[in-house]
Image 1 (cartoon, rainbow, N blue to C red):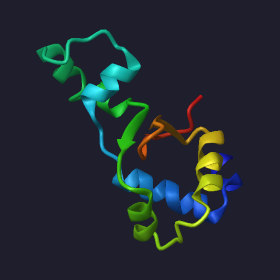
Image 2: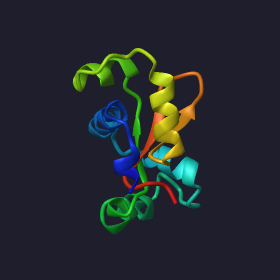
Image 3: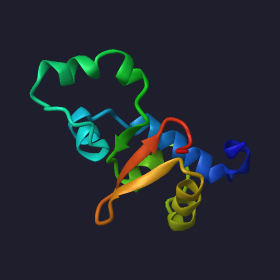
Image 4: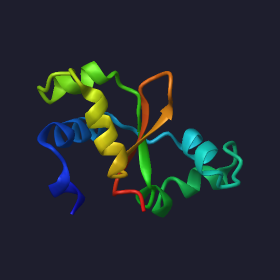
Length: 109
């Protein structure tokens, strides 16, 4: 599968990104455009149960240097690792100017 095709540094960075990622319901609503009012009880109830468990991704906004440090890999040449993770549909950059990524819980299909 996808995991077997990843290089060791890509696996380590992905694990670090997953560890550093958090669910942001407002950003999730904004990007996924679920048509919900983020101030409503319906919105918060939706993300407190089944929908939370079924979410597609979390957001990671930690610096790449910090993520590398956590799994003891060098931050050199990360571009190729990020491309590999993006090509295998495990991450997606949210903001091109900052290190903010969607980290998919399963490969994006």
